Length: 280
Image: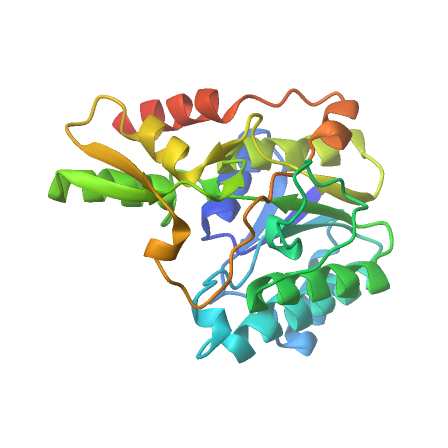
């Protein structure tokens, strides 16, 4: 089986590439420098040359703050237009497609976990562009698997866990937002679910994947810094004004993923495995 991975140098892309290679798949990992997903002719040529069975589309513009102003155009080009180009190319060679989306397609006003078919209402540019990307993907590849995820952390790249660990070395006290609820996601667990979809040819549609159990950023930070010599204080998000509005309660239901038979570890378990891996 031949698999193309876009965004292969990113946090998720590196994990899924490594796991696929370890399983013996023929993997074609493309970084941003190696494949410009905004160049339709180049993408089409490359995909037709490889003729993959699957395309795992991990490439994305993820700077949520910059997407509100200086990065607005690039956010839309990459997350909507680039995703459309990838989807068209996949359809042209009958390749199956997995597209990674976000909890930010929701406004966070619902107190119950969001189901995959719940109405969307993004409240920032990043969420709006990713939702447009979902629609573009489904237009060209109606059987695509769309995975919405949240609060991703992993060994590669920048993420909240690394930020907390670095700040704890510089400061005695950290203030962390305690009024935004979500589910942390270990990139390696998400990558394993993507491969699970491939190997079992799980039916197309929208899936919500994160690690089990919910948390606020403060609760997540407190667990990250357990044993560290630092005081973590809960604060209201108004203490940290940001350009991009964040959903207050973007907890997504994991029921549909669980129904596929995939075992979802808790985020606490995932964090322990992550911390063990970075200490090796």
